[in-house]
Image 1 (cartoon, rainbow, N blue to C red):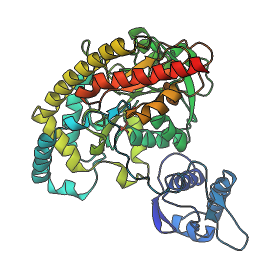
Image 2 (image 1 turned 30 degrees about the horizontal axis):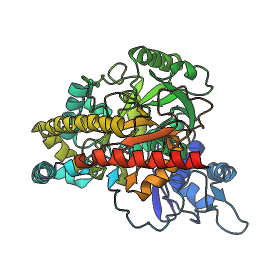
Image 3 (image 1 turned 180 degrees about the vertical axis):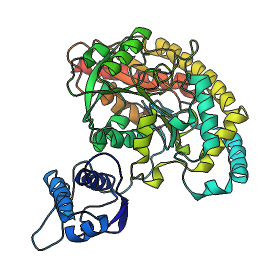
Length: 478
Ligand SMILES: Cc1ncc(COP(=O)(O)O)c(C=O)c1O
């Protein structure tokens, strides 16, 4: 059933929960997502009740609830309106800063080799997709629609990541951040309020969860990955977000023992593990470890994306969920814009079918492995007082700086010398207390080498060494 609120039409889902609850949830999500911006006047309760075919009491209850939560404001004699700066809403768009050129020595984590994007192959695959996509599929977005593409992708993930081979469990997304947004909406409806998150971790995903109503709760990471034992001490937490293949940013993998412990924990609390399959394609010292999702498809939700393997500009990823959650996802009033185009999905399927995608991944693996080795050797030569840690995997390296060197100062001084750097502190949820027990990153930097030009690796290490030694000397002079 749909209802009209201001200029937008909202779908009021059928399903569990009272009508008051479903109405307040629908309005809350529309406010949080920005579909109902600040100042929007809500229809009088009598009008909305008539449209929804319910009693006026249902609507006044829902308005009252959202008023108490700070989403709505009622003024005597005037309409109830969406309040400015309602909780969880995006801030008003600020003027876009002009695009910054990428630094000459780009050591920013999270950026793949942009110059290696397979332009010709992608163009050919996209051309084929445009010519061959069934006409009906031109009607909409690709959430669960392009069955052939989903089957191809699921088959690929089954072969390479050992995920459960059931295309009906896979939804196409515009990336992992979007996937977390959907998932949060589903999980909040199911009553979840908190999610355990690795500390340190990438703020991108936990920020989306927080915005959607799930409070991120930090959990330690050590040499074996997430410290599962800590989960048992948390109250009201039945969800955990992890990067098992390659922890970001500590650079470790979740050990075999911890994987079993983690799944055991999820079963014991009737909870879910959200597996961010980050960096899974890039393991250089052997075959990547299989996904957790394949070990227990009823307890694990897997997120993956093309952001590192191809480019974030493709805006495509996937979300693999246990069947019951899919039904909840389909019950959401999904904004059409957040699922990818069926043409993009089809182009990826063409890339996979023709073997181009795997060939590209193989070439990238080789390229990144060599670059990583080169960077480690250059750092050992120019900056022997610093130490790197982490697996031979992925696109980043934790670098521990010599004692007493402030990472923030290195980042600022590095920027003046053309170095794009990020301090490890940026990924922490809590400040590191005392000596850091985790294997990395302790106080230091997280060096990304995905988009560092090969010919600049040596120079980058040399410049970084200069920056660090200047800071040490100026500290000594203080
Ligand atoms: C840990 C982690 N997970 C996932 C992603 C990918 O996010 P998305 O697919 O939204 O680009 C990133 C990107 O930097 C990341 O650092």
